[in-house]
Image 1 (cartoon, protein in one colour):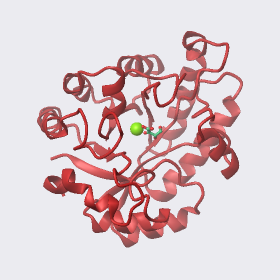
Image 2: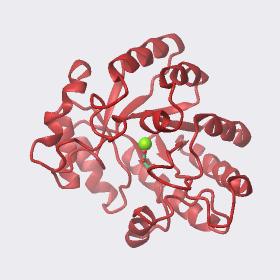
Image 3: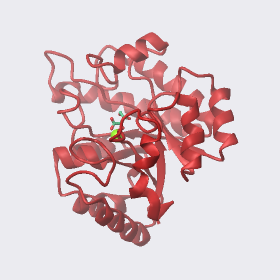
Length: 279
Ligand SMILES: O=C(O)C(=O)[C@@H](O)CO
Ligand SMILES: [Mg+2]
């Protein structure tokens, strides 16, 4: 049966970040993910996880720099959204992964997402791929020392123009080139539908490879609740369940969407009809 995690960066915008853990647990989630924990001491987050019986299943390494201002700048509209593919920023990438691994250890989190970043102006995807592969190879070795997986995520270029990694096939080619068993794909079905479509067949193709470390979902195109939009998630959850039973895939599915009612009080809970059968 599919296991769902609440993405606390997008869900529960009506609440301060630390209170979102309590709300997700009350709504029946057993696991959480989010972008960045770095504005909080690990102990503050561990306290929220433990008080609510929640597992931390995913977060991102810093998208640039390791201090709060750099992380915010790297994530804002004009930010680089990661350094992994950017030649000359290898030291920054490594410092970010090291910080993420410290947090992963403290939070008991088994995977981190290392964002690829934008292709720098004047360079091509082909020109920066060697930097990306070298950085991921280093990150996978470091993460393996503490039993953590490193994830890479194809993201659509309507949301993030010039993002390096956009397609599932490219992500799986990168895994083959890096050759590290703990490097896996974060397969976000929202991005997959926008860039490639044919989502059910892609699930059937990639879940049995054992190289998909995590799934994420949202309605397309507005990135609201999964039961709003052009994707039929009721059908897709059935496909995931069927394939998972056949191949033993045991990953989490993150609800990474912006509730339709925005930050209205109770807005996230009122949109959880999609989750009711799986609670
Ligand atoms: O934007 C997404 O999709 C994500 O999963 C974030 O973690 C940014 O990578
Ligand atoms: Mg995602």
